[in-house]
Length: 145
Image (cartoon, rainbow, N blue to C red; front, side, top):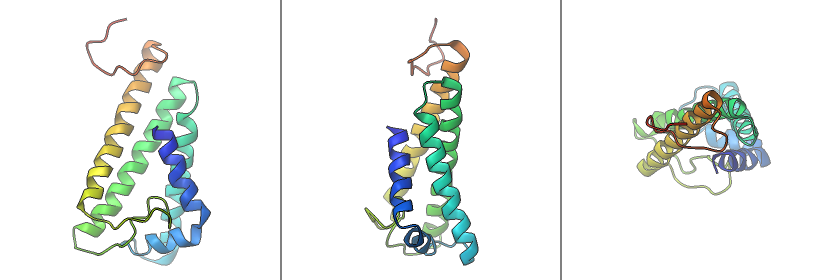
């Protein structure tokens, strides 16, 4: 699920990369060249995370989950950078110019869910890599082999 979300986000952003950069330009990111770097970094992170999460190897999935967590935190930071000073953003940009929704406080709730899901997948993949519990997503501390 997380992999598909990340890959869908990247697909929407890449389908109109200049449009995505324009959307990011509505955030307080700084100069135009920096906006391009942020856009490319987000897309690269989403594609990398999504691809790694689709592998069968737990340690590779853990790296994908760590990349997903980084992307989730980056999107949360962008949202906060606009919401705290009261900036109006008409398109949050999660899917580029597609599926546009205004940046409102509830987008932060979506970001919290995104961070929580990435964290859960990271913990599960790390546990699986260490304990060899292939296919298990039980991240509780009381889990026994």
